[in-house]
Amino acid sequence: MTLPLVGGLRVTELPSPNHDPRPDGTAVDMIVLHYTGMRSGAEALTRLRDPAAVVSSHYLVEEDGEIFRLVPEDRRARHAGTSSWRGREALNAHSIGIEIVNPGHEWGYRDFPALQMGAVAELCLDILARRPGIEPRNVVAHSDIAPDRKQDPGERFDWRGLASLGIGVWPRRDGAAKGDPLTLLGRIGYRTDLPLPVLVSAFQRHWRPERVDGVADSATLARMNGLLSALGLARRA
Image 1 (tube, one colour):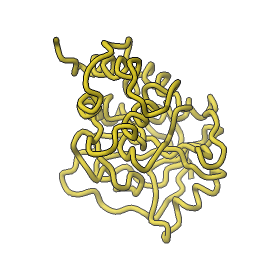
Image 2 (spheres, one colour; image 1 turned 30 degrees about the vertical axis):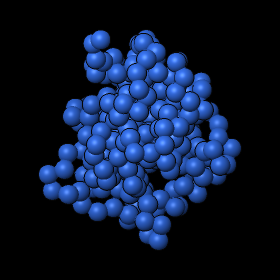
Image 3 (cartoon, one colour; image 1 turned 45 degrees about the horizontal axis):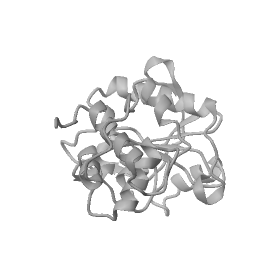
Image 4 (tube, helix red, strand yellow; image 1 turned 180 degrees about the vertical axis):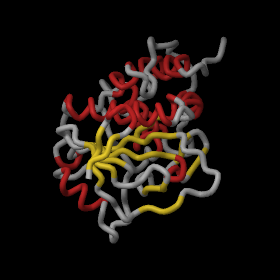
């Protein structure tokens, strides 16, 4: 069954049983983007709808741009797992999860096709239009909220392009190459009780994809400070 969303975007309903009620009074104020990390979209859809797997997402976007809705947005899907962002944990309760078909680092990671990225952009813009409480800094990667466990959607994902459309945030320019990297990462939103290279790699996958090595070099520090400026969180010297 195909239904229209706001703005005329169309999705195919393919329900998953793996969801439950969101806790009373919970604000839905995040979008979490994933890659499927499986060999095909069909394989991913089967797993996301398998009661024994107990995993799901609200949406899945195929490589040809087709969008499937698996879980209603007012229900809690099972996509984030153990997660943390901006000091808050258990983010399934607060987020809308979008799985994006890509084999991932295990099965032959590749670029995301233009049709797919266009559909992801349309879907995110539709969600943001209906949910103005989702701040740009709360449109995040799975690897941002679970940096010790996840790499998705990874360094080939076009975060800069999405930000140019008003989805998430990208720094207009780099800042000063200074500061304690752990402190900067904590201010951005990352948990700070993990090894620094793990956190730096997660940051680089999202905001410095040309170099993902876990090293907080001067260019990475400059990008962190540029991002904080874009978020309005830069501190005056």
